[in-house]
Length: 264
Image (cartoon, rainbow, N blue to C red; front, side, top):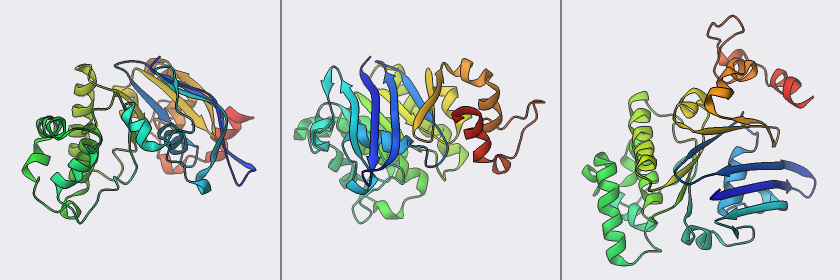
């Protein structure tokens, strides 16, 4: 496997376990999804992999994270980016006063000028909307357009592993479809692998080749999308189906029921 996370433990305040003995793997040319409720530890794992954990968010105190056999724990974020691992954070975090093109070029800072120029044209071919808005101030874009720019900025560094944290959050269905189509096409072309954190489990499982479910800081289930979608707990608590097969209102699902089944 290209990325291996083995028995990682992340603790904050020297006491509270944010992640407990979590293990997952991402192979070459694959989309792997990490599912879980809010606060389960999904984003913390991504930050741990990419080296951007702040002290108040936790510290890796156990386990290993390797990429192509090289240990990533303790490395600086820019070193990890240079090795081909890039994260698109939740909320996009663009430099809003800068133009779209200036934001994109920030992502190519580790590349030579000719390489960055070539990468820019590739981003424009993937997201034509971004090319149309290249001179616009990023803060004036719609949420969907900003997400395209955020993904494009990550692609500027030519990553081998692209980690996406809640890419569909707050976006219109049409934009979500457009973004996911672009990402899956990139993977099909063999250019990148993807580790996807996504609240929309049905969408995530429709594009992934493998999935992990994390609750209360630990992985409680993993398998192919077909296997996960056959599981009664996954059907009820992530896909919104009752045991009778009818759609449920997910707001009515209680977190304690999920934890009672999987963590007791």
